[in-house]
Length: 565
Image 1 (cartoon, rainbow, N blue to C red):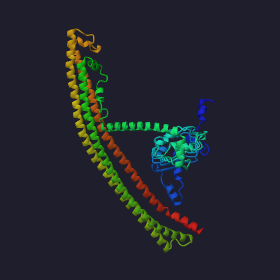
Image 2 (cartoon, rainbow, N blue to C red; image 1 turned 90 degrees about the vertical axis):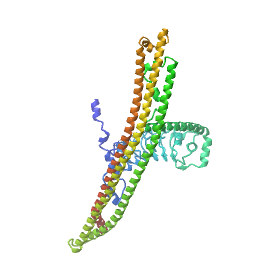
Image 3 (cartoon, helix red, strand yellow; image 1 turned 120 degrees about the vertical axis):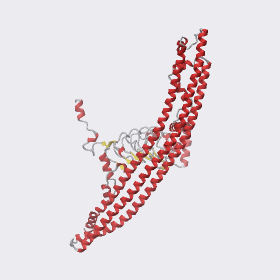
Image 4 (cartoon, one colour; image 1 turned 60 degrees about the vertical axis):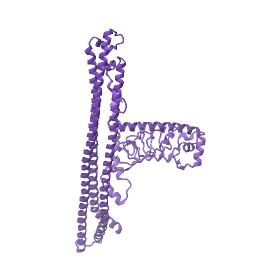
């Protein structure tokens, strides 16, 4: 068979003809259907079916027994907290690492061979991988909020990785039953788990008693000692790494990274071969370089300390702004919630009256009474009046909620503008002082080049007078014949060093400016998204309320027909 014919016979996963028979891929259509058929009953189910599918609002999704082979499209539900994909044909855990809000994940009864692509699910509390084909415990270290973990009925043949659960301080329930590792002769998994995992309270859904834990510690004493020793080393290494990362982030946010030691001085000489050659002309040049290093270091220390001080001030300002913003949002949110709760109480009373009127009308119709009779017309007039009043109430509620949201949106915009002004003023003062320090660095570089010119000129004159060129660096031999050449080397060195200082200053200036612009852009974008989402929420809610009254008549009709039948 030719290659082209082979290709023709392969059906893409999204073009499967018999989804109930052939394994497929998670699609939007599958998600929509599962969401709209999520087990709600009666009126709740009917109203749920009427709602548009807003993926950002979906928090729970069950796709069980769907013959799924591959995971996809879940990224459209960023706020998913519970996901069940059990009893499918999934072979690889993929395309779920963006679901960082996920708290429960069920992947049991599949064909998964490896635990992977879940490191970013840091809010996960329940993970079920029961009855798969997993051979190794791995990639679970980052799930620090994990409480329940089931890895039963897999193909795990080694205890390697179990000790890593010691870093999951919230882990309380663990299941490893049915794995080959638990069937080894002279090995008792329950005792091993009790010994090495002090925070786990239930193994195979049975309580780990103190007696069992003590027995496990006695039996696996050597293993426990080795695990504890390795754990202590790792804890120290983690602490050191965390401190290093924190310091780097703090310095970067202060815009003074690589200014806390001798990094700037060392950078001045990179690629400066002529400068390095000048340093080899004797002790006087070496002493000058040491003094140069110390002077540069003293100033960069001032920049470093000043940068950290201003960073702390900015952080206080930023945190205060965000706290005030959050308080304002909560206040308006509570006001809106109060309005909605009052409206819902009003709606219940209105629907009770409307239901009674509609039921009376339907009963008259069922009994064959004249629809044009004064009694029927009176009832219809009452219902029309209720409908008009309810529509007016919805419009009033819409005005109230939109007014509150508009007030909040405008307040946030005004607060952000004022905050931007304060931060810019703080940053301007910081930049002004830092520019003074960089001016000092340039003066130091110029002073060093002037002193080096004197030392180098004396060196050349001495060598010429003695005609002793044996120990002259090869890069400086041409200077023995042309005294101006050594001055040109020093001028080049000076220009190179000042350029490096200027570049470091420019970098600080640009990053400080970009910091403000990026932060304000992020604040504005977040507020715009919040405002749009809130407006959509208000409109959707009130539209649903209006539709529920419009459909009340058909519900009452069905109810009366069922009663009469």
